[in-house]
Amino acid sequence: MSAEDTSDEPRSDDRAAEEDDQSTTRERLGDGADRAVTEFDQNVVDLLAWVLDTETRARIYVYLRQHPNSTSDEVSEGTGLYPSTVREALAELHAEERVTRQKRESAGAGNNPYEYETIAPSDLVRSVTEQVQSELNTVFNLDSQLRADGDDAAESTPVTITVDSDDADD
Image (cartoon, rainbow, N blue to C red; front, side, top):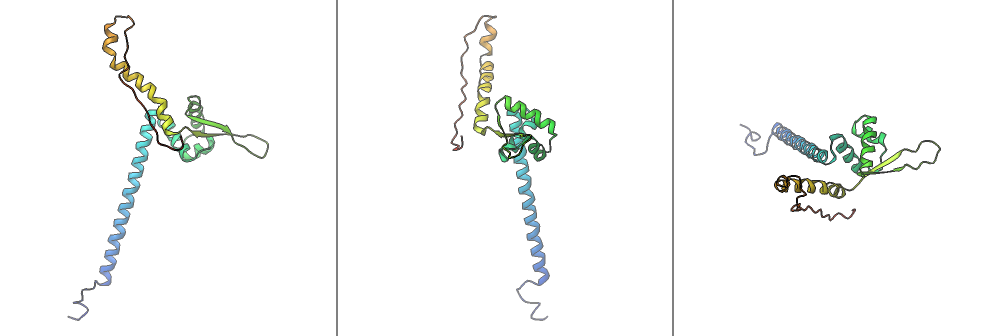
């Protein structure tokens, strides 16, 4: 045996294998992080779909949070949704005061499209709390309403939902 064979230093092919292992580990961690972000994003979209009624409207809301003052065409391109679907959803969201819009300024003559921006998430939550609170109180008071036999039953409001926000941009 030579002195090289008994050395404690790893051989070059051992180093290469170790670097491959590290590279594979980094790739797996990267894949795991990407999957976690995707799952988080999907969970946010799912939650917003419940608040905003559809996944389409939720995707539009998320896109507009990331890209405020976007036109319907920009939202369509950014979300992969059909332009007509985006226009319809934006009209509904605007009517419900969940997005705001203003005409885009342009130097030339011609069509100035609307730019859309969402309300803050805390304002979105506040907008649905009254409805949720009312529905919970209806369920809570179900027995008294059933026993009233058509009379105006005294309704209590045992469920109160408050939304506090420490957001500086609200």
